[in-house]
Image 1 (cartoon, rainbow, N blue to C red):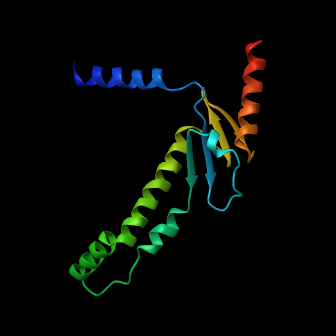
Image 2 (image 1 turned 45 degrees about the horizontal axis):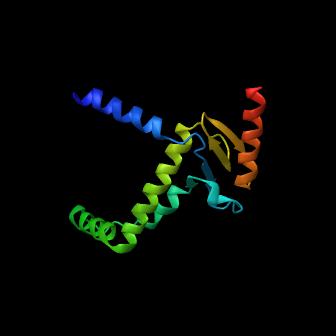
Length: 138
């Protein structure tokens, strides 16, 4: 099977196996906690990337070789690895929010792109989406 057609087949398989009630929650550091998160299939927490980047900063030691060595040491140390993971997680959350069209937080998203904003109870947000879907089905 050619690579492109195999990739399209796999993408179609992923779409077909996705649950119709897939619940995705978006929130952010600093917002009040959400209740009912156990009802969510995925939770993305948007975070301040700059805070994590600032934790990796250091003063320039005077030459490029020393700066490179210090940067490598900082990034490879356990605290640096934790910061890099936090950066990846925060960037992934921001990318997913953008891709799914999330405009404000908190947000509860369900296929086919229905979103409830500003509700801190996931069960309540799901209920609102289900009521809307039932009204549209009539």
